[in-house]
Length: 197
Image (cartoon, rainbow, N blue to C red; front, top):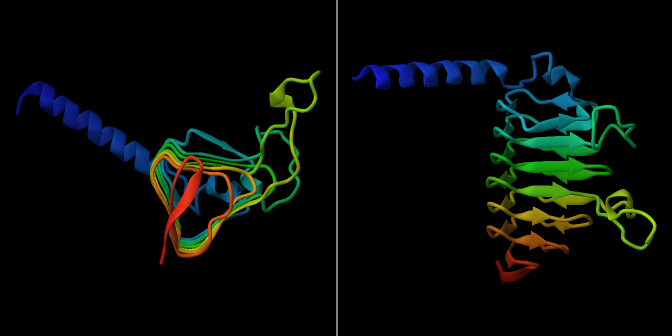
């Protein structure tokens, strides 16, 4: 093995060691900031953004991948509407570089899997007031629910007010703009049901 290869192995080993120790888990100081952080769960290092942990609940044996943005509110000092804004169930897998941005209520039930780079939010912007920038206009509360056992494919977007049923497969790159029934496959932008089982 060359010197360069040995050095690369050492650097990779050091990074992996650090990443394991920097991950957020239930017994660590950062994990204790959450409203609840279930036994056996982990949020991998590094997080992309993390705000409002006191309004985020994570179940047991859940894996949140690296570079995930997880927030209740838009920033660390924002006053929140409740202590149950983002609720993630047991045995959930949130893929690398995904974003979950809650303002009112996002519920991800048990055994839901996300591919990488999935985006979920429960707030949209209004555009009726021509004197305000769109980014400063909000709309009414629009909670989001993703049902038990569902799969959300890579690069999918779940928009405000959506209720995804149980055991729903959302195809990669889909934009979910309306409710999806239990036991279906949905794809596209906007996502539409192509198979019911």
